[in-house]
Length: 432
Length: 159
Image: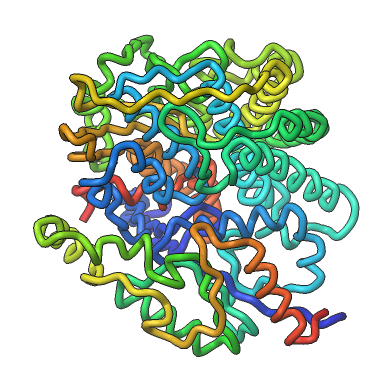
């Protein structure tokens, strides 16, 4: 083994959401330190919401992130509803699921087809794809899938980014029945495209096996993004009533940890976790079409996060088609907002990149007194740094060059699909 | 080869909602834009980005550090025109929401500001450089964006 010293510093990681740098330090052929520095500037939303009306604060927190705004919106709304002890109607839940499916189609498609696909074709960017032939065709399909997700989000929420219609207890404006139905032919068309991309990500041989990870995700019957039970691969299940305790005792301390000093097993959230834990709950049509690909899971290959997302797009399409087919929209009176005894609760949803926790406390006037969020990317940060270290060490031992290693680091960071605009809102105080 | 509009797309302190919308506008416009636009600097799409002469720089986000101010000034120096994209770039808000925090909250966040070299006040782009066009909105108003883009495509005789 060559005893070498070098540093790799990647500034402004590209083809990810938000700003981050990565520093790798190697001494005597051994990885000494990995630091993922989120250079996204903080915007202090957990302070900004204090004193704001609980019934309106979801529109503020939506602005935490441009790509997963609907996840923040929904997570916040769910938490406020729990505090008000409001149970959303079946119709509201159906529409909420549609908006989350639209979000995941759009967001996963952007990540997979624009950020990751160039790596599979050995190119820096989709801009370098051929102007005709297979690459050109694939790009058309990529935009078609994104467009279907974008339209679904727009019809249901009013806009796919910072949707104005979702609110506490329902929607301020319902979509028109015809507009919803009109989405179905497009969803059916892009289903074929989405499956073609699943095949591409399945055939991709990028590999890094996470040594002994643990996965956690919300478990539910429809492989959706809402749920009441948190499960892990160690087979423990946390019911909703225990979320606050779980958050403060396990999730937050874990995310604060220094990568190489952390004693317990690292854990991972996101599509790979969801697929490893819950694939039986995929839509029957998805399970049928993706049978070959589903045998990959459970998997500890980080790059299978991409394959999992690709399959999730198909599930989102199938679930959406089914909901739209059955849904008969009617005007509903939204529940009144009257505070009972509760002043605090935790809402949990699956955002595209993993489990998102909203912890809110209100005062007697229903104004926010305290807010804390735990972001999927922040929970994955420990695992990410650990695995980047593992990957670099492996490639060093194989004799790869600094340039080759640098390229692979970027690919593995991309496989985690980190969201820096979100992650900067979690104050990790250890890594100065 | 026909003339292309040379652009850079940059983001500072923001949630990148307008950048995400720009990427969604590509669903309908990408192939047309590829003929008309050279994406000289666009971190969302490529790793090999150039800081060179831009016909138009599109800048999203507000400015909250010395480093970002320097970067913005550099972009301005390299660009014939600069367009502020989205509410944070045009007005500072909502990224500038902490400018209006009460004294108690400002005191609470001060150690964080110091640690990350963040300014006490977040500024819109026009407080630092000359801005030629504004596309306000949170996220940016796509109709206005398309009008502004069209204006520059015509100005540079691409269309």
